[in-house]
Image (cartoon, rainbow, N blue to C red; front, top):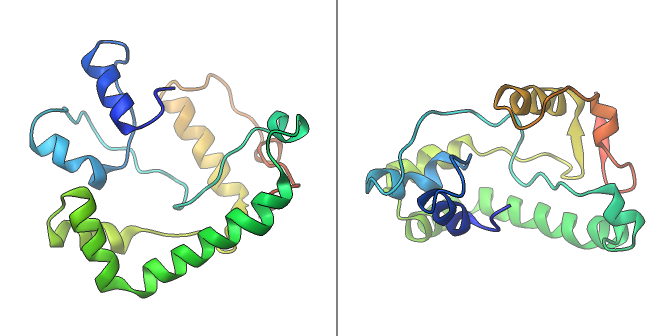
Length: 158
């Protein structure tokens, strides 16, 4: 784990990491400047704002399910609704924040999806995610979708 995009970029430059997966549009300025080489594309099978946590952290009291359910998830849903509703302002923030051209920001914006409700994830999404992680060598074996969902903080949809 490198902590951030800058940490990943620095790890690649230092030879501490061979590659990393990151969102296409937000890394485009580094591709365009030739600071990073893009070797290919893998479309993520999950929507934006998927929250991943470790059940052990909940069991150990490091993460409070009520804070996630009553604080984080409503805040993310509100932010996602505002972001999609206020297209012009959101596109302006994406252009200035990520150094994209207006057309690139619009292309990105049109492809962004959000889970609704945000605490739900489909079994199909998890299965496709596991398949992608196997394909990229991040994991070696499949795991069933139901084993990836802690019902204290998320709902598995069929």
